[in-house]
Length: 524
Image (cartoon, rainbow, N blue to C red; front, top):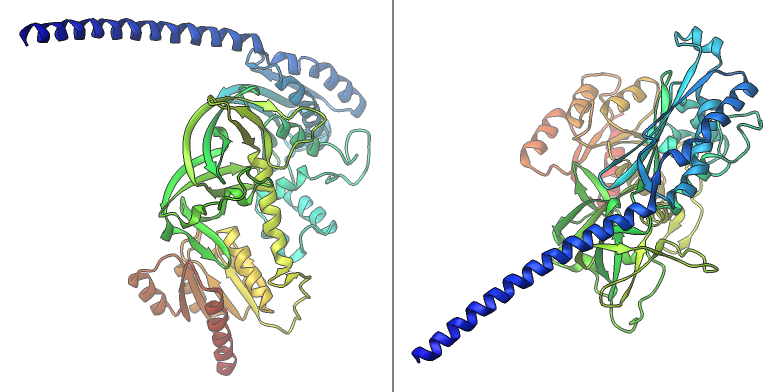
């Protein structure tokens, strides 16, 4: 036994030595592989200057033609970008440069009158941040006029005149990227041609990029372009749905959550979750996709029925949406293989990748999926349980309800339910906005208000209304996620006619609303 024990100990020592040697070899192989990968990556990148060096000459020619003085400043010319991004950037940068010159930079006389130097400035910069390439195009011109956008929206019939004032600046700026949309009335060879910013967004989407606008009236406008560092390689989160593994680009994920099933709340028929102080829409990922798994005979598990639901909060050009998946498989670096010609790009799919086990996984186009979902949600206004139908205009004799909530989604869903019930609906984004609308002559029969809102919350709104003899007779119902007895008691003391808690029951809201309106008529 002693000899056997000694032999086992010697063998264990030899195994330890072999394991140590193997670990050293593995580390050395890992370092060599990383160095080789880094050198291969360097072969694929080029300086940003190759995308912008031709712009100064083009700008000089445009300035001579249109009698403007503009200096072009290029920052970050040595920033390394994927060579494949050059083609995706060239045309958008030209369009943004023309847009800044025409819509942004004023004539020298106008700039002097506004207290600016006669020569305008356009700055194009590039840098890398958080695994993305950020390109900004900034001018010091007159900025974007929100009212001009609103006028064009109403003139084109895109949004009713009574709802266009409820659109936020981000939603207004989004219309600038619609095909054929322009705030310029006169058609010239520089603007008003029906092309421009829509090309910017479409080109960037092909490169998995996004664009956002930041404008300050009288000071200038900035277009922020975000693109992946590499088009051929991407960091992705692998998720499981419908017996398939799909890849979600990591740069589109704002946050990963695990929530209990009872935390899902309903606003009408729309599931929602509370995230960072506001309610956002929740949808199953398989409901966004337009393809079917190979094993279609097997039942697909419903993520929303799980006790613990994995949630991905996605930040796309159309806003923030939460999607529910069956299971998270982990983060992985993938090689992006685009869909080859002559096949057209499927809806919601960027391309595919081959996993380590040989399985093919599709890579999702988050912007495309969220855009389709937002469009389907907006079309729900014209839908009923029996199928699509056009809602007839509500007569002016019907009661008008003022919905006050800082969440645009909640306002729209509640307005949809009230419109179906044949009420006229007005909306306000907070208590201050509601007071201003009432003081400007808005006739209102009842108010449904949230509690937690910026500038003026629901309690302050209620206190202000009841202290004003002109509005004190209007019944106010509180609709909030605050279900505590303290908040309910305070609302009753301030004169609230009813207290609803989110998630609300649509039928109950309509029933109580009818009772409040009937009681209000009797009191009058």
